[in-house]
Image 1 (cartoon, rainbow, N blue to C red):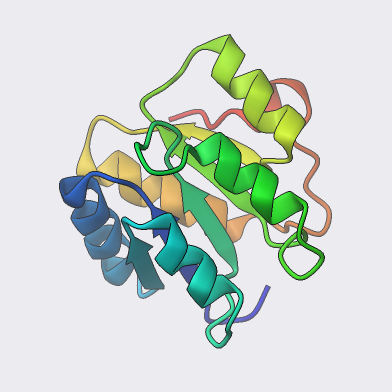
Image 2 (image 1 turned 60 degrees about the vertical axis):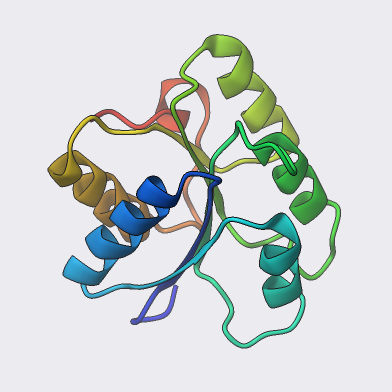
Length: 142
């Protein structure tokens, strides 16, 4: 990962997008937020910028996070970008489906701003070239 990470985050909730962008900014990390999947994929397919990590909510009306993961993993140009689920859905079905589709890590949306910052900082600190998110390592511990 480069010295200056760039994060992309897709979510249909404007408040969550704002909090993510603010938390990343406080950490000194560039974040691009998207509420529209078409805009996300337009940017992904026409770099720069190239994200270090794509964070994705699962429950969105236009395109689910699972569909976004699947589309990214089926694209030769996007398949190696780490995808971190950031969702209120914290059930085993959604975690397993996300992992099976190719998500690299799973974070249940934190209940506080400081925990969100910690989760973002932790994700940015992962060496995605060697990280193996099997079993319990797949789910973030807040």
